[in-house]
Image 1 (cartoon, rainbow, N blue to C red):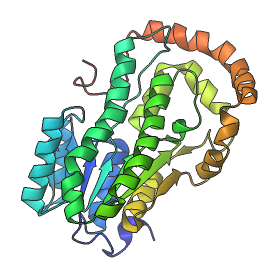
Image 2 (image 1 turned 30 degrees about the vertical axis):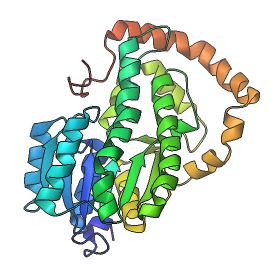
Image 3 (image 1 turned 180 degrees about the horizontal axis):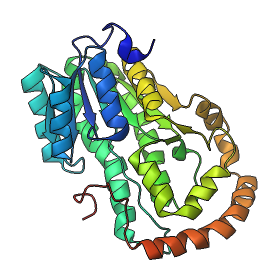
Length: 298
């Protein structure tokens, strides 16, 4: 029995706010949480998609347009959720982007914007919702990545932002414990979303690199699998979430992944692939995937 076939359980009547809810992991997490009886507040940039999803989910679900780097917009979304649905029981800080190029070849503003959305956006989301979460002794799930502890060339800004998200989550977990708010960090590897598909299509050399990674880092999880893991985390207030679960074993070896030995092994691959990634990035002529909203690609 899949999670969306089960009767409402721990999420029945709970209010869950999801950022980046217009597509991908955020959209599927919202669908599954709603199927388990939750009331959703959908937050993101693509208003048409958010409105359509809220209408599809039915009465009792709301949506708010907001750029996660805009504190006023996030505060308005949080306050609007409390006004419309009575409070906030859980937040999934999911919004994220991935730029194209390297530090030597590519748009530096795209690198910076990636960190702003992925890391600063999580900080702003947490700040906007902490009061409401405290009022209900709620749960905050912030989306990091396996890239937080397994860096790859061509992903510098993404890896840096996700490592920052992980440590931000670890720190605020300690800050919020006395308030009754639990904090979890999610660490997916590759998930079959627009973001990953477009990165592979834009940069064939990057796609080839992914295929050479050891298991489980070369595995691509379905978006449904990832959403199910996130919903379980909300239900059980989990501290860590790995998708697939075997990524947890990779995390346990993180000291090896940043060792001189890893530098040598990955460096051999990088010597061949980075020039190709840079050549393809130049030819691409843009810093993000085609589905990345224009508000991000400013």
